[in-house]
Structures are given as C-alpha cells and as structure tokens.
Image (cartoon, rainbow, N blue to C red; front, side):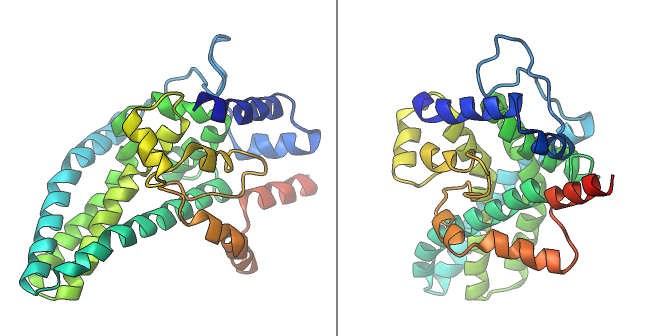
Length: 280
C-alpha cells in the first residue's frame, strides 16, 4: 500500500514546497499551513499533534459512547416492526441503500469543505474546514488520529438524528416508516465509519481483513482515493466506498452544483480569493 500512495504524496509535497507564483497567494489564503514538524517526519505527515478544546473533546467522547446506545435499539425495533408487518424482505434493500446514501452525503460534505468557507468560519471552520484542507497537505496525519477524534464530529451530528428516529418508531406503527428509519440508522453508522475507511485508505500497512474489504470495494480503496489527492483535486469526493464517484464525475455533478450556487451569488473560496487579489 505504501507503494500505491508514496509517489502522489511526494509529488504533492514538491508542489507545496515550490508552487507556481500564481497559486501561492491563493493557497495561503485558502489553507493555513501547519509547520512540517521535525525534519525526520515521513512524507505525508506533519509531525504535529492536534488537540480538541476540552468542551469539544467532551462532546466527541460522550456522543461516541452514546451512538451505539441509540443505534442498536433503532436497528432492533426497525427489524421487529418490519417482521410484524411481514415486510422483513425490505431489510435486504436497506443495507446497500444506506451505503449509497452515506457515500453521497460524505461526498457532499467533503466537496463543500474543500470548496466553500474558510478555516476562520465560525463553528465549522476549525471543526470541519481546517481538517479537510490540511489533509490535502499532510494526507497521512489521519493515520495518527485516535478513533474518537476520527468519528467524534460525525457522532455529534448523528446522535440527534438517531434520537428522532427512535421517537418516530415509538409513536408510529407504519411499515414504510420503519424501513426509512432502518435505512437512516444504517446510513448514520456508515457515515460515522467513513473516516475510518478513509484512514485505512492512507495507511501504509493494513490487516488482511481490511485489504479484503478494499479489494471487494466495500470500503474506500487506496488507488481509487488516490485520484482525489492528484491535482487539481476536483474528483472522487465520495470516501465511504467511492461507489458514486464514477457517476458523479461523468455527469459533472459538483461542477454543476457550483455553477448553480454561483448563479445564486455563492462563490467558491478560490473564486472569492481570486476576486480579492484582483481588487488589491
């Protein structure tokens, strides 16, 4: 796996160390570079340990613990409701549908974090934008992160969704609603696991089980994800399993979405930076 990732990372480091003058100001404005750390840091690592604030760390840990507490009952009661209504066959559709939805939602968030806002944006800047953009510079830093730091932010968002699903199961006996809740619950689990799959795609060495999952394309495969880390970094945003990347690339989904938002007056970060530099 090291051989798969080494060359693109080396190329990226060379690009960062001596970028074309036209892109230097834009890169500096879009990303706050972290120091490279010690000279002995391997390629792709910054050598810098990131730490959450105490309040954010509490949220990450507490929601990571509570996630399975809500996830398991939602799955159990959804299956039970479908079984009672003799609709258990719908559960066979829920798993692939949940994986596709998680891939799409993860890709949408990834694209938005790469394309809009800045590291100084309140709330989302430090928690979402900064990690994504620094990941392009130091892609293997994710391999050093703890499980909670990887899944915590997603658990914070997923917990209210699971709580709502549990409430709806309590007040309604509808079979289609139970199916929708099962899909949603499984989708949140896949979304929470997305950064774990992402981490595996950057690891220099992985277990035999992980490599099998990657070969089967059940999770993100390293060479597939390598495309996103190749200039101009505008493809393969989906990082749960990457199933939707070929389709979204072919139809130009994200470029069309950017065009629609631009028509509405919402410019990409790069476009705004270019306009600001022209005015200066």
